[in-house]
Image (cartoon, helix red, strand yellow):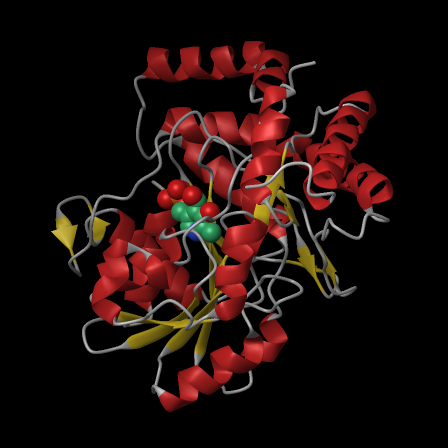
Length: 374
Ligand SMILES: Cc1ncc(COP(=O)(O)O)c(C=O)c1O
């Protein structure tokens, strides 16, 4: 049996016709930018996340950058971000000229350690904290928001439709950045992102910023950029969005199957989340000793896996200048060495999950018996 880590084929085959039709209309009207599809998608995505405003942009990274710019964060400012995340979270801070202050992750949830984040934010005089809903699991935003002077921004790149205390992410912090990179739970045919917020002023400013600061054509009020979403992208996302709830439920079912089949293995640490969040399983990440050997054995058995993320931010060369060292964030480092992302996509079948779990249990057992070493 061959099991890919992610298979984008089925959902695009299913929606091939309507997507082609939408693209043909765009080709015929030649309205490639700032047309009907972007506005329609913004409305639908905002409604799905129960927020007042949604502004579509060119990527998730750009979404975070524009949020920070709108909040007036820039040179001389600091923003707290978790060490255990994709690099774009920290990059967004750097791109506006501010400095990321890193904190460790919680050993259980692997999300930002809220207590450390609040302490670091106060002691470093940070303007904000970016709570990343890592792997599709909401960070504990209420625990981050203890000090009204510190702005809480959500990095919801991996968490479309996830809920926190019964509410969808995206409207809980001051603003949220989503990504529609192709492999995300809602993936674009290319790059894409969105900002969601309940703050009307912030939304209006982001709209200006994404299109050269223009209030009308060739009249710029502020120095902006070009971060618009393409119509081809928006039309596809609008066609896919009505299916997202079903795809999310299917991911949750796959996660449940994994949990049932692996839960009693003491050598496999499963994802954990507090009961006030509902994760959407962008990734299903387990933790184990001898991870590399196990991954190689799975690969031999035709099962592809991933690593999210093998190098924490403080140990990336790109952030060498921040002066962090090995040992600074032990939970993130331990996690980076042990994590393994199992195949996860809505169309995975129970038989395929059975196969992954059998092979995984077998590989882990052989490693822990000392039969095979890293
Ligand atoms: C946690 C996180 N933040 C930010 C981003 C950046 O999104 P994009 O790739 O659309 O720029 C991603 C996605 O790659 C991500 O996973």
